[in-house]
Amino acid sequence: MQENPLQTRFHTKVTQDWQDWIREALAAGNAPADLLLTMKEHQFDDGVAREAISTALFGTATAPAAAHASALTPFHGRLDEGHVLHTPDRDVRVLLRIARPTIAVLDGVLSDEECDALKHMALPRLERSAVVGVADGVNTVMDIRTSDGAYFQRAESDLIRRIDARTAAIMRLPEDHGEGLQVMRYGQGGEYLPHFDYFQPDEKGSQPHLATGGQRISTLIMYLHDVDAGGETIFPRIDFSYVPRKGQALYFEYTAADGSLDPLSLHGGAPVMRGEKWIVTKWMRERAFAG
Picture: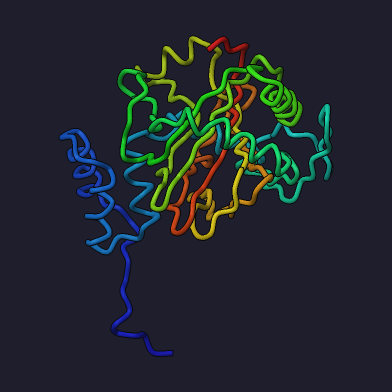
């Protein structure tokens, strides 16, 4: 078959010159969204450009950790085996498992009524979402994450208490290892560039967070709303994406028992093309978390 001469060829490799340009542009205060637009204008593949910008912002696993993680086959997960996970108040079905990184798609984690109640509770609290600064550890609003969020203390209401207990059972860690639930709303065009949920051990900004509860172990993203178009949760290093479905959840983990980190857990939220995306996230720590 002859090649179409009008077909656009996208760059799938970011050269050192482009990597240097990304770092310098970010250091100069340019918005990540503007860098992404420039790279796409220069015919870079969208996913490749996003990962390059995210790597410059967040780094990757440290070299020893990355090498160690790569040697683990599979990266042994904490999730119970079997097709059904038992929690104090309901059974949750496992629809899909991936061994590396450890990922599971879960069905029936939240009821429709619980999804609607969480959205209703979050609405008056919503504020622009922030990310942890790698240099100082301060939560900072950045263009890489365009959502509004609301934070709930553990057990602050009957509904939150019930979901805290359920997520702890799913994630197989004590409730007091969990950070408070965070509800996030992404409007049309809202996205979160690929990033790691774990704290980079060698970054200065990670130290205050690591000192309070230790490293993050795993994440459970619960979906409160069907998205009309876009808004997938993506794992670019394994070419996997999940389409949000109300009441379902995506579980993944990235910190092994020996402390090594899994760089394949790089993930992000694709832009919402139509409608809204609502999620609630639970992060689990190595130790009891008082924050």
